[in-house]
Image 1 (cartoon, one colour):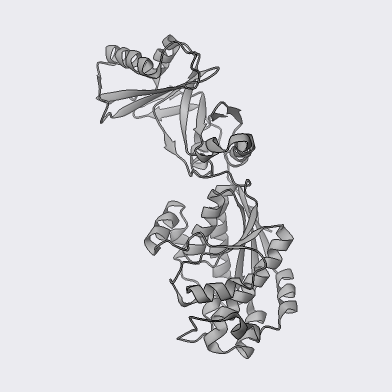
Image 2 (tube, rainbow, N blue to C red):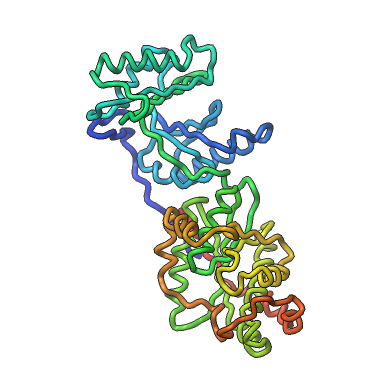
Amino acid sequence: MLKIYLNINLSDNTLKSSSTTFSVDCFVIHYGEIGIKGKNRAFFEKKLVENIEKIAKIKAVRKSGRIEAEFKSEAEEKLKKIPGIKYFAPALKVEKDIEEIKKASLKVLPENFESFKVESSRSDKTFPLTSPEINAELGKFIVERTGKKVDLKKAEVKVYVEICEKESYIYSKKVKGVGGLPVGTAGKVVSLVSGGIDSPVASFLMMKRGCEVVAVHFFNETLHSKEVRKKIVMLAEKLAEFQGKMRLYMVPFESIQLEIIRDVPAKLRMIAYRRSMMRMANIVAKKEKAKAIVTGDNLSQVASQTLDNIATINSASALPVLSPLIGMDKEEIIEIAKKIETYKISTIPYEDCCSLLVSKHPETRARKEDVEKYEFYSELEKDVVELSEVVEVSI
């Protein structure tokens, strides 16, 4: 069992904005899709708060239409990777008083800038000034105090004001988040992680839709096994940053593969390999109480990913098979892989057991009945899963 922990340094509760340093009271955190969940909204908000506290190691509390969290400078990088967060900001929290808001607005301004604009919003409609009136009064105040100009189209700096039920938040820095839904709101899935570019991206996209992901990798014992294991664990570590932890099953595939090589024609071996992996992923899913299998399949990218072959492979699964990359082009997938920082790891050379002793021209229109007649190793598959190394990765 492998556990990985990050060292957390205590924050001094300050934020640097250009050359100005000012005290910060909190993070104000906004979500997107959660806001349209109606009666289920509280469930999603509570799960997001739980994930923020678990992953970013900061206290958080639900507010009206937003989440307030304690400020620690080192938490910012973690907040960027938490699904469910649309954007967040290091903010000053003051009373719902225009004079207090004016004072705070000067504190969030950088030292060097030429133009600015004010953007305000009111969730508390009882506040005596409307949003346009707040913008005008605050803009006039900042001009008088700084001599800088208002530019509504191309402002160098934006001052944001949120008038809420009990307090106001003022900030000048918005940090984009992952978006989507909080991990743990959509159930658990088992993701087949090969070590290439696609499968880690597929895993991430399922996390973004609220799924907790358990990873499964199939490998052969070779001279390069240690390097392959290291690479897969590195990918699991990177993916764990989005959900706080990850369980990785390293499944020894050699004995199954030898059976397939002995019995199955080379033209069909790739399909047989994948169908066996699908059945074993289902065994893992049963152990984990997972509700679906996830693959990095991308339609027509390789021979095993034609419509016919995908149908034949997926028919080996008793659970739904989800393929979030199915309609993307490779450039889109690579772009996401770079954003989530799995691309460089994925491009490290490794041995793919699925390529062992297969035909140079594999079947592209395999039928289920063509492969089923060779499949007599279900008991061996159960035994192999029991021999898996289970790696626990935590941040």
